[in-house]
Image 1 (cartoon, rainbow, N blue to C red):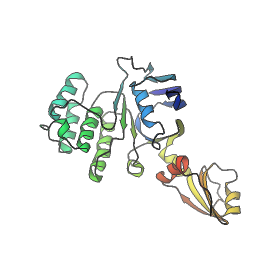
Image 2: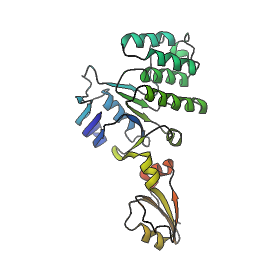
Image 3: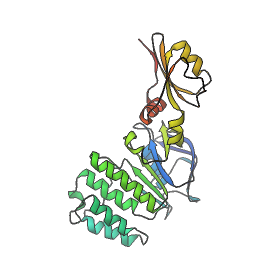
Image 4: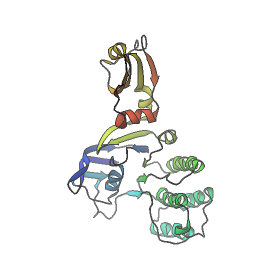
Length: 284
């Protein structure tokens, strides 16, 4: 369980996380989305205890998380993570000796699946393979919380597909909280259960993918008709061209909503763009 209570984090007086309160109770694969600079890495590092927060409190499994905590119950891997320049096989054995609950069988199985050369030293691996080694070590740990920061950087399309399969397999073997920060939105949608969107240091959205599928729509037509349909709905964005308009909503639509306008479901990516990026507005 992860609990953030009024968490703030500042760098040189500039707020990066702004009074965040968030509670994650259930095991699952969660996706953390946000634009560059939104606070994703700062949030993950804070939950992992890699840095202290400026204000508020973070708890994992009921225990406070700080840089002074000897054991946080969290395994965190950031992009471009570094390891000792040792052969992959030796790195895995060291990880196993340091952690009695390390799932060595899973680690070796994934090493074979991704055709990692166990004799090759870490610094001689490609960026994608370095990231894969780090991810395997992280997932094979016994921690109750796994945090992966941009884990598919350097992966080609085939490796990304295999990574998502590995992620799902790890969760099936060891159900726990896994949070994945990524920019490749649509690909991970088949793997995750819940979505967290952070924007400018605040949590803008936290719910299931099913909720997005059921409540995220675009509504297009004559502006006056679109406005009439969306008057009492939660509009997250709007485009206007002449007398035509498209409103983007996150809400439960009334039964008669489509009588005079065109309604389409939003993809996860379009929903994300409307929530944090595209502001809409009148176009000439």
